Length: 96
Image 1: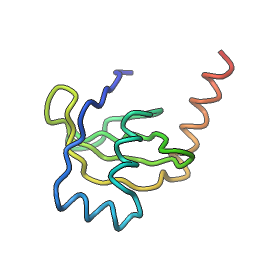
Image 2: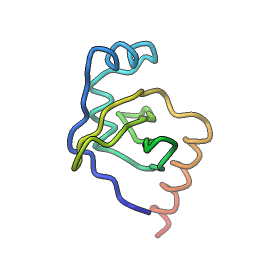
Image 3: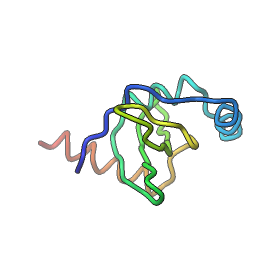
Image 4: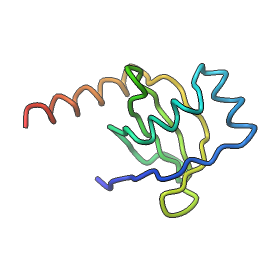
């Protein structure tokens, strides 16, 4: 699996307001971008990334804008399926 390194997340008025509706802060998005555990490519060239912000598991949907730069589409609490993927990946890491 290709490794994704997020150096910068691009915010604008629209996505700041959108993530606020999901109860996620800009700081949590930045923290999640630095603590990625699971990612996959989705439709239209988007990426679904799941990581930790403190004890919270957050999923980000991003579009690549350049080397390490991503535009934020949305951020929300990870779904049950996404949390399961993270727990599986973390348990494999602990067992190896």
